[in-house]
Image 1 (cartoon, rainbow over the protein chains, first blue to last red):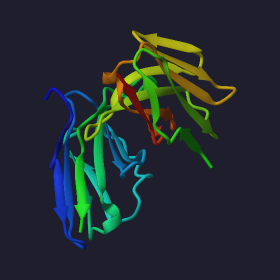
Image 2 (cartoon, rainbow over the protein chains, first blue to last red):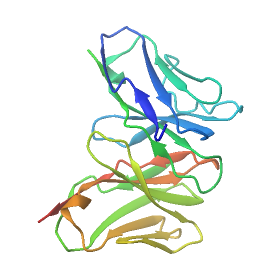
Image 3 (cartoon, rainbow over the protein chains, first blue to last red):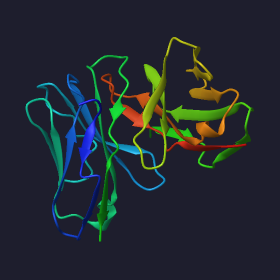
Image 4 (cartoon, helix red, strand yellow):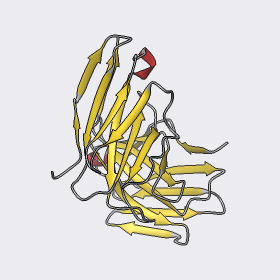
Length: 115
Length: 112
């Protein structure tokens, strides 16, 4: 597609439920990132994928969070047993390749509300 | 600990003036720094990148400086317009592979 696509754009769930957020990066972009943005806050790094390398999971806040990237393209961020503090906008970004020049192209985000 | 600081208070300026936003960081040695614009309800959009060996970078009405001694970047918008109103985020490379760490952003409001 022309840009990074994320779905759903909005998700309201009850505490304790599992949610899946999807990211479809720009075609040909080998690097994919997930960030989280809470209201009025900066972007918090969650996880990074690059090709077939092991992902950098250093930003995942707890073991309830996991992410996959299938076939080097689409990624799914899964949050198990959601808590109210998980409420935030989850942003996905992709970039062309690992280099010291790459700008990130962001999707519009998935707004998660945990009741 | 590592920290990126941007003015948390909104910056209000008059149309036509120059807006200057500040990004300070501690305990990083980034190879480059980027600035992004974010509008409400949207994802950030890349504006400029400046490398550690560059003092200044310009793009149209935008100018970015990078002082690795002061650990500071300044972002300037000249001849500001109401359409420039948005939140501006600075981001530092940390980890050697485009792992960007973002500041909380500064909201700019340009008044007619």
